[in-house]
Length: 365
Ligand SMILES: NC(=O)c1ccc[n+]([C@@H]2O[C@H](COP(=O)([O-])OP(=O)(O)OC[C@H]3O[C@@H](n4cnc5c(N)ncnc54)[C@H](OP(=O)(O)O)[C@@H]3O)[C@@H](O)[C@H]2O)c1
Image 1 (tube, helix red, strand yellow):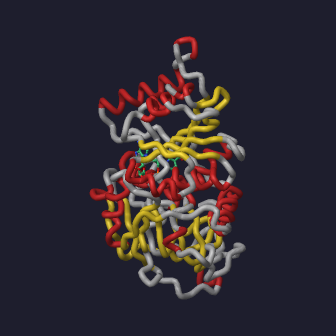
Image 2: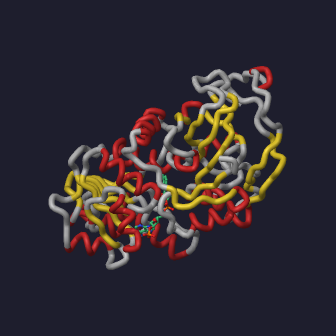
Image 3: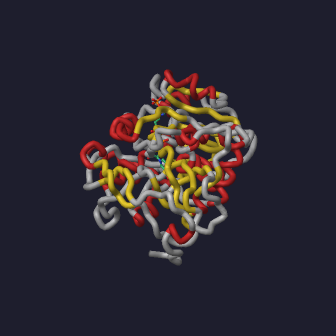
């Protein structure tokens, strides 16, 4: 175990924490309905390193990476059983000498590699997390509201500002304006003073416009690259952010028609839906177009970058500031009980959620 062991919770005057708890365990490799098992007597951690706190979880939010790791991670990466998921909100019950106080309401995340190392993620009544990964919950928002902010909003923040260096008044295309990551991207860009075009299916137009989107494109009417090539923005986009993780490279390969020459295409993916011949062929095509095909062989003359969310305290704090000022709103698609976690995964896996799918872990909240 890394860090210095600070001893038992009782020795720090923390006494009303049970020794066992309810959690969801991933017990083998596969889809959520086949590999998730509810366990009623998992241990509550009583010893953990300096810099970490123990949180009584009130709500946890699901992310696609949660079920993807369940399905594909080999045993040497994910030692089972482990408690899945990253995002949560709750109350600090053992501040363990950090700047937090016992009883303080917080939200934040456990990055996937950290959760796999401790084998304790967010789908538990009590979890441990580095204090740096948590921020205080603003009083006007509930634990359910804020439980799903950290991973998705930091992904959008890092894509737009750390990678694309988006500036005020620049124009941005968000592909997937109703996805959790995309909806945060639209709001972050509007808060920065940018012009935003976003895509979704027609049924989500009102939702996406409600986030502040200036222009809307229904990707189900005709291929997106065709619609954008026929009616390119003027000036062309400075940044395209694919918050869906398209496997088909067409939006990128056609981008010289609608992305400025010094513009940048940032992607959350590409995300194959499974391991089969068709997906493998499309993945190979995507890799060829992005990384291998040179410009003189007709390759796309636009920059392409992948965002891979990582913890940055300053990013989480900047986001927390915008959330508490109401400049960025958390978006909850649906709320499920702890016992209905498998139904929540079904909703997320449908690919149709508008914002976060949340599990209410503490029914008294
Ligand atoms: N690289 C990273 O660090 C990182 C971090 C976070 C997430 N991700 C990835 O980013 C993607 C989005 O994650 P998420 O949590 O935001 O997903 P999500 O909320 O589950 O996305 C669902 C939404 O995507 C929209 N959508 C689906 N296909 C679309 C398409 N072809 N064009 C436009 N919109 C489409 C749906 O709208 P409609 O119903 O209107 O189609 C729905 O509202 C996932 O693939 C995830 O694995 C990557």
